[in-house]
Every structure is written in structure tokens, then in C-alpha cells.
Amino acid sequence: MVREIVSHDDGAIYEFHPDLEPIATVADGAELTVETRDSLDGAVQAEADVIEAVPEEVNAATGPIAVEGAEPGDVLRVEIEDVRVAEDRGRVITIEGFGLLDGHEDVEAPRTRMTPVDDDGETIRFDGLEVPIDPVIGTIGVAPEPESYTTLVPHDHGGNLDTTDMSAGNVAYFPVFREGAMLAMGDCKAAMADGEMCGTGSEIATEIDVSLEVIDDPAIDLERPLVETPDAWKPIVSAETLEEACELANRDAMGLLSAEHGFDETDAYLFSSLVGGLEISQVVDPLVTVRNAVPKAYLSDPLRG
Amino acid sequence: MVREIVSHDDGAIYEFHPDLEPIATVADGAELTVETRDSLDGAVQAEADVIEAVPEEVNAATGPIAVEGAEPGDVLRVEIEDVRVAEDRGRVITIEGFGLLDGHEDVEAPRTRMTPVDDDGETIRFDGLEVPIDPVIGTIGVAPEPESYTTLVPHDHGGNLDTTDMSAGNVAYFPVFREGAMLAMGDCKAAMADGEMCGTGSEIATEIDVSLEVIDDPAIDLERPLVETPDAWKPIVSAETLEEACELANRDAMGLLSAEHGFDETDAYLFSSLVGGLEISQVVDPLVTVRNAVPKAYLSDPLRG
Image 1 (cartoon, rainbow over the protein chains, first blue to last red):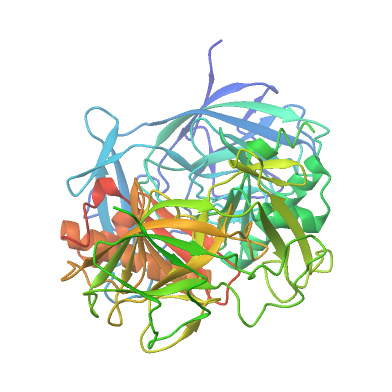
Image 2: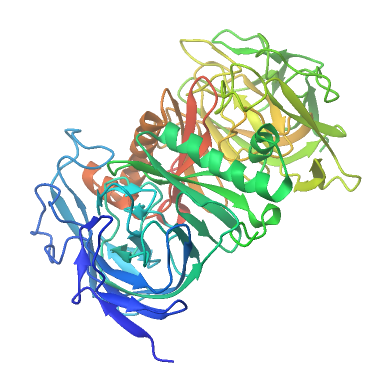
């Protein structure tokens, strides 16, 4: 079977909104290669190229891709099979008005550092240091309902989650709010730290292999993104503060544990305090994002019941 | 060499303050076994034993242990060789006025769940579920200067850090603020999630094997605790909010990276956004705690330069 290719040249969005027009319509079960451009639309090719302010359009997300049969109330399963860097350089930057240390006088903004890809394609360079390429999909999500969100914002539809688990070998799940789901993704990084402190990773164009599946009649009412790694199920929550995000992420984990084990809220809370736990995705976007790892030893498949 | 035993029966503190009287004085290089009682001083032995409010004295820390030759400006290196559970049961509890979901009406407080240790000593049980024993030292620190902190509070001297990396196979480093350092530890858990959401792990008595070393003339001016795992060096920061803790933890990581690689602040910031990253220790104590993993691939030994 030849993978269908969906490219940013066919279309990309800068806003997830309820009424998206698809650039491609694919079958439930489709295997795709999604081509993404870098989050800055190619504006930064050398260290002299600095970004003075967060662009109005940023984090182009290739899509939207309509998935046949996806209806509100379903869950879209996105298996991330591979993410390959598709250009010979990434870039990591500061921008005034953005980032964990924004406004500190000893931090220069704007600044650009290029991170060239080494010949073997396995590493990038930062000022002579070798960093393993471990690509992350920064922005991935579906059409929201009822509000719209630019691709700078993470929320219950996904969007700019900047979560290192959005990477090859893992599976992302999104609630379907609108017919066709309208999946879009982009804003990839060759490497990124948990937190994404300066506001970017090594931003780079990629090719992403995914396979899609619509789960109808899911066993839980999925309200927000969930990611499955080899070891854990992790609810992903974006909120105004890390404290608020932690609280919601623990509520989500408790819900999963209760559904599986019949715990009441208090026992789920107590048990959640013993295994896995809270992880930081990013602390820099308009909403911040955390996830909460529930080890698979205690959770089979929450969506299939 | 026979390990010297320091037991909570010899003495334990509920407050780290500048003028502590040691219960033991040991040589630089000492290998000790430190015996700790559970954080609730044995008050909870069955599920009928509930704790109505955070006790005035909690998290008894065995010590203080004076280390010969430790002077202000030095660093105390605490290699955590082994942590063994020393009783047949742990306990995980809710207490009114404490925990991530404190005050939510669907969460019952107080409630106690006992977590008995299985016969093989490898696991505890929570309502029939098996949880691997992976002991964590919840409270560990040295005499602070100039302020005092109860053992419920984490700060730059350590204290109630509730950090899962404070476990066997890792090395903790503390600034020495007072002569003799005055090390104390306790409040151990048989298992704990990152976040410690309900406010406790499986609280349990332990025996802790540590070896101590005074590093005089450290290559960096260590302001706060640091933990070394097999893969990373992690500054540990406690602050009023997670946001503030993340910012300081990134400053600390940037300082380590700059010292090693000669980065200016901005390049250290950019690089910190590519590898390792922020981790949540606990979100429930009077100050919250995060850590920031800098992979050893980019940092040799920050204290020896």
C-alpha cells in the first residue's frame, strides 16, 4: 500500500476553528505521510535572521484532513509511526514577548542559533555540541467546538501542545468535535526539552507517518487529548497556570483509574499519588501544558473499555 | 567496615534551623545507616486511624548529623546507596487542608488506606493492586541560614522536597550553610508519584544507607539542592508557584551549562530548551518543588569543575 501524502503545499492552517474546509479527505484506517514546514514558515535560514515579535501566523499545521466517518463524540486515534526531519537545519530562537525568561535583561531577544543537521542525519549541532535528533510534533489537533484557537494556543482540541510524547512510537487520541475530525499538524522540532523554556525547540520541517482510526462509541467520554506511550497513558491538559493544569490532569487520571478499577474519587486520588505522575510539557505558550502518566500496569485500554 | 547506625530513637527534628545540636558527629567519608520512622510518627496503623489536620509535628527527620570538616561554603555530597522499608505496612492518606484537590466536595478527607508490604518485600498493595516498592526519601536537608523551616517546608536547604530522585542509586548535594552541615532525613515513602497529589505517598519507616563527603572549594556556588542520577544533573527548586520554581530551575540549569561550555545567558537559555527539561517533584507542600534535568552528555561534574 502506497501512503497518501498530504503536504503543507496543499494547505496549512494557522487557526483551529469549528468550520474548517479539508484539504484532503481520507478513509478511516488511512496511512498517511504528512509533510510539514517549520513553525516560522522558512523565515529563519541563518543566524542573521531574527524574529522581532511572535508572528501573527505561526506554527503552520498541515491540513485539515477530514477522516471519513468521524462524528462528534467519536475519538480519533493517531498512531505516530515515524517523524523524519526534512531539511538540513533547524533553528532555536528567542523572541521578545515570549518565553520563560522573557523580559530579563541578561537574556537577548531576538537571537537565532542555527542547529545544522549532521551528515549522518542522527544529530543536530548547537555551537559544536551534538544533540540527538528526536523529533517532536509541536502542534497537532482537530477542529474545536465552539471556540476557535490559533495554532499558538493549546487547548482541549490539541493545538500547540508542545509535548515531547508527540513523537514516533506513541499514539495520540483526540476527541472528535466536528464531522471529519479535521486533523492538522506541524510545528515540529528536531529536539525539544520538557518545558520548551525559550519558547522553541529546534524548529524544523518534517515528514510524519501516521495511521488514523476512528473509535466510535469510546468507553470513556474523552474531553481532552490523551497520549499512549509504550509504558503509560497520559492525559494532556492546558490551562492558565501550571497549578490549574495539574489539578485537571489529576482529575483526568483519576477518571481513567476509576473506570478501570471501580475506585471512588478519593481512592483514585490516593492511588494517583503512588504511581507515575505529573510531567511538564511546556511553560511558555498562552496556556501552559502538563501531562499525567498512568502506568499501563494499572490501565488496559481506557478507550475500548 | 561496619556502618554506623543513626536512629530516630537517638533523635529527630521537626524543624531545620540554623542552630541545631547534633545527635551524632561523623567523619568526612562516613558510611551510615540512617533509620527513619514514618512521617506520621506511627499514628496510623489501620484504616480507622485517620488524621484530622496536618499535625504540628510531622515528617520527623532523623538527625541532625554533624559532618566533621563541613564549613559554610562547602557542599555536602550524600550518596544514597540503598533505602529499605523497615515495617510491614505503609499508609496513604487525605487530610483536610492539604493536597492538590483539597476542599473538593467529592474527595473525602480524612481517609486512610493502608498499603501492606507483600511477603516478598518487593511490592505493596493498594486495594488489591500491586505497586512496586521504590523508596523515596521525602525530607532530607541541612541546617539553613538565616531562616528556619519546619520539616513540612522545602527550601534551599532541602527539607520536604518530596522528589522521587531522592532514592537509591542517586547522589544528593546540599549547600553547607552551618558548621557540620547538620544533615537530617526522614518522611520516606514505599512508593510516590511525581506530584505527590494527595499530599502523601505510601508513608513508611526505612533504613537508609548513605555515604557522606564534604566537597570544599566547590567549582560552583551551589545555592540549592542538586541531585545526580545515572543520566542527569538536576537542580531542585522550591517556590511559591510552579511558574516561579520553573524559572529558577532554568536559571540554575543555565548556570551549570554556562560554567561548562562558556555560554552566555542567552545561549544557555536556548540550549536548555533542547535537551532534558523540567520535572515536577511535588505540588502540595507550602512551597512547590520542581527539578530540571540536564543530561550528563552535556555536563561532567559541576561541583569539581
